[in-house]
Each structure stands twice: as C-alpha cells, then as structure tokens.
Image (cartoon, rainbow over all chains, first blue to last red; front, side):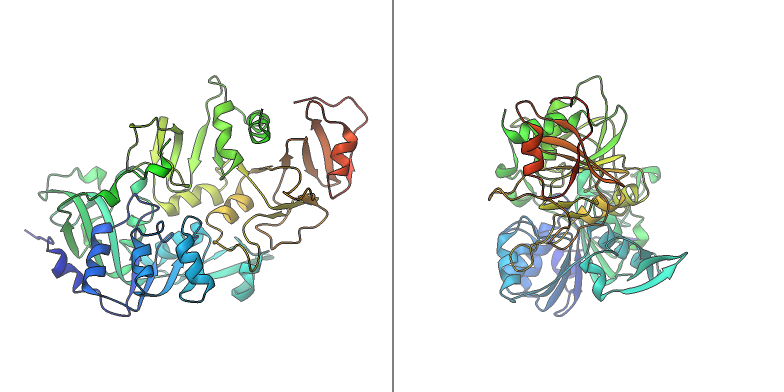
Length: 231
Length: 216
C-alpha cells in the first residue's frame, strides 16, 4: 500500500532556499499554517511566495514576509495587511499583482500542462501595459503565461494515505489548483483516513498530484475564529 | 437612515428573483438586509461560494466559512462550494447576473476607477477587474461626492481604470442614474432632494427626462 504520510521535518526538507512556493488559502480558511510554521522554524529563505493574499498582519504568509524570508510575493491583493503594504511601499519586498481569477487560471493552466491562455481582462487598463498583446477575431487580448512553482503547500480537511484530498467549504479556494501546479506537493491535513475509506466520488484532488501528506497534530489558534471578523 | 443604508436599500430593488449576484466591499455588503424573503437570490463570493447567506451570529462562526472580506458567513439552500478558478469561470463566463461595487470615480461612459490611487493606495485589484468587466450588469453604489464634496461622477475618470464602459447604473444617496449610449440619464431622485442639487453635484452632463421622478 502506498503511504505518503511523513513527518513535517521530512516533508519540509524538500523546500530549499530560493524556491518558489505556492501557499493555498484565502484568508484563514485553507492556509497551511502548520507547514508555514515549519518553514519559519527551519529558516528557509529567499522564497518567492505565490498566494492569493499574504494573510493578515502577523499571521501565516505574513510571518514569512515579516521575518525577511521572502524575496518576492505574487498575489492578487493585500487589502487586509498594512504591514506587507508598508514593506512593499518601502521596497523591502517585491510584489507582483494579478487579478484574482487570472492568478487562479495561471495556476490552473500551469497544473494542466499548458503554457498559458488568452484573456481580455484588464486589456483597457494599466495592467496591460507590460503584457504581450495579440489580436484574435478582431479583438485585443493579453497573452498570460501559465504559472508553476517548485513547491506547493496546501491544506486539506481530509486525506487518505495515498494523498487523495478533500477540502472543506471555503477552505478549498486555491488549494486544489496549487496541488496540480508544483514539482513537489505537500499537503497538511486535519484528518487521515486509510486508503480505500474515502468515497472516490467525493475526492477533490486525486492522490497522484500529492507527494507528501503531513497530519496536523493540533488545530492551533491561528486556524480559529478571528474576533475582528465576527459580529 | 444613514446614507449608506439608504443606497443599499434602493440598490436591493434592482435585483430580480433568482438572480446570481456578487456584492463588493462597503455599501454592497448591506444589500442583503433589504432583500425581501420572497425574492430568493444566490449570492456569489469570490473565494468559492454560491449561495452565501447572512453573517453568523456571535458564537455560531465556522472557521472554514468566510466571505471574500474575511467575515464569517452562513450558506442558503442550494449553496455550493468550488475552487477559485471555477469561481471566476462563473464570472467571466457570463453566469453572474449583477455585481454591485463601490467606486472612487465613475465616468459618463461607464468607466470605473476603484482600485488604485497611484503613490497612495495600491493594495492590488483582487477580483474587482473581472467582476467589473464581466458581470452581465454592473451597478455602482457610492456616495455622490467624495469627502471633500467633489463629484465622483465625472466626464472622464482621472484615476487608472478598473474597466472601461462597464457600469450600467449608478445609485447614490441622491439619485439613480443610468449609463446609456446618449450619456447619463436621471431615473429617480431621493426624498427631499431636488433635481438642481443632483445636477450641481454631478461632474458630467445629465439628461433630465421631462416627467415627475419616482422618489426613494
């Protein structure tokens, strides 16, 4: 029986200084906080992070940025993180923005073994200035290259030992896309089932995409409710 | 009623039963409070929800279920969850009936500028560009003027655009305006407001139909 379960230390040996690293998550849900904490502890640096946003100040991806471990951040917005915006404005970190669905589609096509796609999103805006543009059927479109990374760190609600993954609610977001788009894919999971226990009809990411499974020992407070977002 | 609530209440009346809608940050998030229960709609959230419900009561939050602004939400009957690529396939593919967005500026030809003030405010566009460009109908909900009393509705936007010619309707605390091929047309005015005030606070020519205006 194939068993991809490893310790967090074993898994994170595959993340090297200077790597490009995709991080799942949209806000707290789906962010691999345990793996991020592991990277911080190991001292891995010079990273290019690819994530929807940088989490909020002092949390998750932001901790890596704040600790100076990130050379470049690729994301869709930083609206809830004044610390990283400040670092960006002081040129302490390079930030590249893409529209959210374009970032998702770049990752999707990267994972699908495609080289890129064509889109009219942003074609009339300053975003298009540095892009390659072509005409197709008489309309101007942007050529958007696909995106892959050295490593993807994702968070799932449930896995089996083969690495089949199931996400939960809005914690799915970028996770299944990133799980297809990196040379090494490490999934941290809240629950582990024996292979064969999960319903094949309800698998979100087939285990073939996943290299290592790390079972989270404790759902720490960073996965919990953020009081300032509650009523 | 605070002006933001007034705008949200009027904006809710633009929604038809059964529509798929998306609500941007700010005033649009107040709209669900004014949707009658006999008008079921499906609220789309960029982070992968169709059928988003009201914010959770204190103590009822689910750590895995937030809206695109991070608030804890519920789901309604018929809801579904999906990944971020599918979420924007829904938007770009023409399945989003109406999007409501706030703005910094909007032009008489429906250009929208709401994501960047160069040198001052550049947090990234998020999903705004795709919502603006691809929603089948885009309704802007905004204060009629900025904090300094200057018009936000202009002949041309001065800030970098989010999308060109994308706005269909503008709803402010003073009026409802439609963007038409002939320019901006006044459709309704708020209680206690006269037409001259709307004209004076709008930075673009306004077509004024010669009839009594409905009030809101």
